[in-house]
Amino acid sequence: MADANTLDPELCALFKEVSRMLQRQNLEQLESATPATTFADLGFDSLGVVELSCAIEDRVSIKIRDEDLLIHEPKSFTLGQYFAILQGYITERETIPGSLPCTI
Image 1 (cartoon, helix red, strand yellow):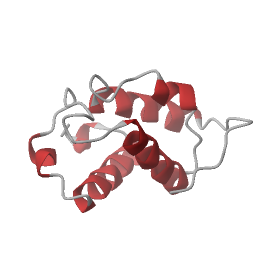
Image 2 (cartoon, one colour):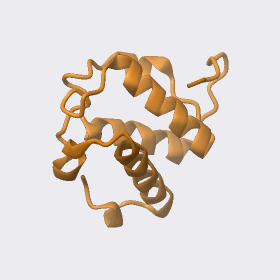
Image 3 (cartoon, rainbow, N blue to C red):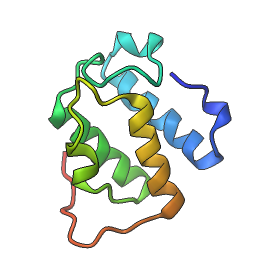
Image 4 (cartoon, rainbow, N blue to C red):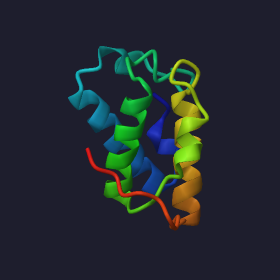
């Protein structure tokens, strides 16, 4: 995946946490993942992306708008796009009113 050392410290920590989450799922493809790797390449469907996002929300106390995830199909949604979305939320520390709490 992308070099975590080029990211701001909080995003770097999140990058490492997401990597650990993905590794726990025994994703062999993660070793060769790049920002252009899609979630489909890693075996994720839409529900898998949402579940991962819910775990991240709990970890860093952000709320990701459903539409930010659902406009992307896993076959074309890349890790680079995903981290750009996360970086935006971390930078702004948005709290989204009316979002449903995530449960996994």
